[in-house]
Image (cartoon, rainbow, N blue to C red):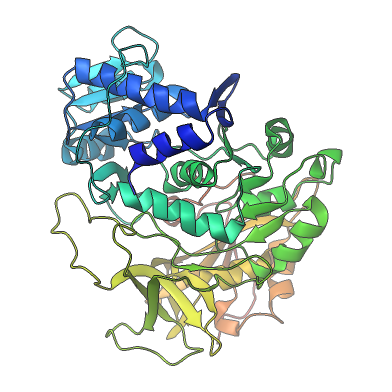
Length: 501
């Protein structure tokens, strides 16, 4: 259950099969293992030793994947950084990472220097950067499944990013669990254009390697070009996050919608209403599940046993519990926070940098609000931090977004709280219209009335061209909350519509 052992095994069993494609570069499994060994030799020649942390700030490039695999081969720890980081957040991440060496693309170098990095800086494309051109070295002796392989930082949407210490085994368990859910085999081609600093993309790579298939590393998400890129990759499996499903569904129909081989997509927390229309239009089954940077695929589904709008059931080797704020379990059918744990060695992260490691078998709070049905299926409700409190009632922003998203003129909707004159919150929504459509806020509210409780109806509506998104396609709700009510915001009460009773 270590990354070097996996690469060696695949080089033996699948040596001539294409393992990786990055733009015009194709590598077989034998070449992939050879590059890892040679990159490890290059890192060792630059003073990197077992246990050292080596950071990187780069877009999806072969050099970044080389670094990650070379570090694992050497027993060092790769620390891929979010390319959106800057200022205080970047300074914080660099400090807590403990990295004394950093690989950077030229465009990000000024940010690294401004953040006060004082270690050894390697620039991609120069002789200073480690490359797979040194004499290969053998995998470091004694690497265990529980040795750290990477530090992945959380998005920091509720505070400064936290470094998650991920062991070798965690990536292989991701490969096994998600691979089984997606029914992956050696003939599959996996396309993922999400950034490699994110758990989704790096784990998709290992899902492919565990299955012995082919991984195609794409670039940033483009709703206009997405299906063309999937077709160019000859992909059978794709990966979607956040607003991506809604954005693709909101585009006008085009020949590219079906001009590809993809049949399934890992797409966590997709609204039920999009599941069948997406499959009918694009020929792609949306597959849900639950996992975080700190965990693994705890809740999932098996081929032939999917349920639209549900995360799935508890996967073998894991456990899950739904609790109220006091920590007591809630009855089935009642929303509460999801707690998870595992009995599989190395399937969960080793903890956060700077914190004490979690106890074996301890429950981990996820910050997600879910419902467990009596038959054992789990349904996502909302992030706890996104729950809106209004007139003494809890409102799920995800539920309101789902209703508003059914309006024929709405492409995307982001719902969030803003301060009320009466304490607690008011409900605000920022809406992106479909191409060629116009959203009338008053009409949108009337559309929602039959489907939402009176206290969940939005008071404020903003219509914009685009929503602020993270590099992984999640809406930056913190930015929307900070922006709040502005001069372009429609107010139901100012329009003479009676306030929620």
